[in-house]
Length: 231
Ligand SMILES: C[S@@+](CC[C@H](N)C(=O)[O-])C[C@H]1O[C@@H](n2cnc3c(N)ncnc32)[C@H](O)[C@@H]1O
Image 1 (cartoon, rainbow, N blue to C red):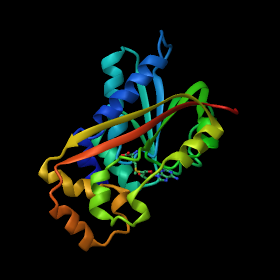
Image 2 (cartoon, helix red, strand yellow):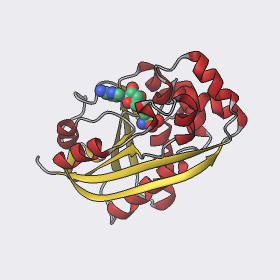
Image 3 (cartoon, rainbow, N blue to C red):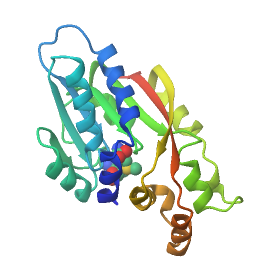
Image 4 (cartoon, rainbow, N blue to C red):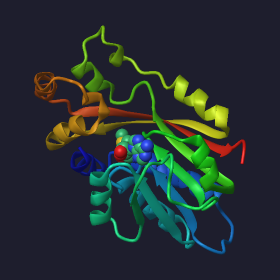
């Protein structure tokens, strides 16, 4: 799954999203700094998003970037360590991370589980949490191909996740990032394999979806930017 995800990520699938996150960092963490910006990617998967974010940062400012990625999956972190040098990669549970209090300017949490108490502990006083959740249109073409119209998985709402975020963090910014991605033929199967949408779906159904030869998919995300309420 992570090899498939790495293939899709490298093709630039998340580039507009990462560009937007990078811009948020550049706009909010500015001025002369004594040290590099410190970023934890909590639920980093195969690591490409943190590596791409560091590139956006370095193109925008001479300030340094110290990035750490944490994921429960040994396989994901092994790919990250193999592919992207110059970061701290770490296998662990984001509910009990091995970092000291107030170690980070930014916690990034993309399409992954959260632990708001732990994120608050890890963030510096003015630190920011950037959480990305799928929007209702995310990969809608795959949803239609994989589920029948009566399936509850056909529709998706991120309202509960958003409400939970706001219980723990003050919202500084919220925006939708939506774009269409032209899909090269060889990327359809890795895309289907990398997404939790295909989990629990029979292989026969996946094969049928692949036969549809989908050539364009919608990426639809909501980016939540917040500051911890309680420290
Ligand atoms: C859908 S993937 C997203 C990965 C990456 N952020 C991306 O978008 O490519 C969700 C990730 O969260 C990780 N994850 C889930 N629960 C976790 C936990 N408690 N601690 C650390 N990582 C966790 C999974 O191992 C998986 O890599």
